[in-house]
Image (cartoon, rainbow, N blue to C red; front, side, top):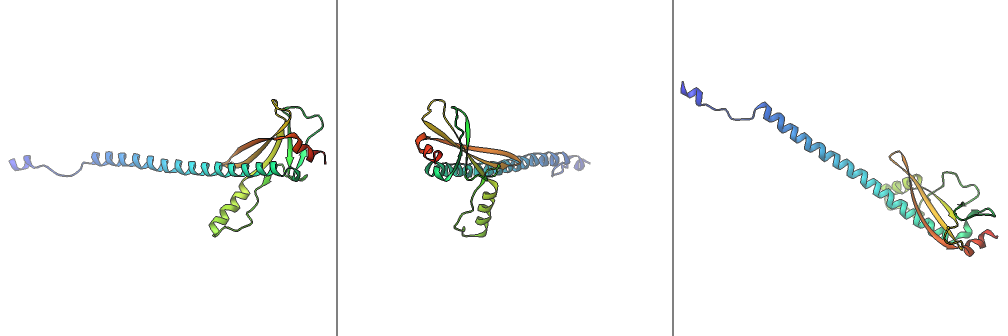
Length: 171
């Protein structure tokens, strides 16, 4: 009789297995969420870097070649008022698209990436007379793009002496 009372069983109970599965599922859920957040942050960072690069490039283009743009400046522009800087009279309201590069990337995946960038990002240029320095124009380039259904803007600005743009205006 004593044999039956001292006998112990080895193994896990159902409750221990359920608790272990709960702990593992919480850990896996956390890892999946961190991975998803990491992908979103990576995409956001990539978009900001591309928008910054585009804005910098287009701002330098406007500053170095003001004669290639149409300036919508009316005669009595006051400090703080914004005017449009257009690439042509027919510039779309959504802004200019990014040009597809002239040199093709080495592989098809890179080309698709460049093509998507050229369709996803648009840019516009504006100018104004700063309140604190009426001898200059402040040039602002805005890059517009969509990220997860929301419109995002990246802006970069610089100043240029008025006489450089006045040559273009007085043409």
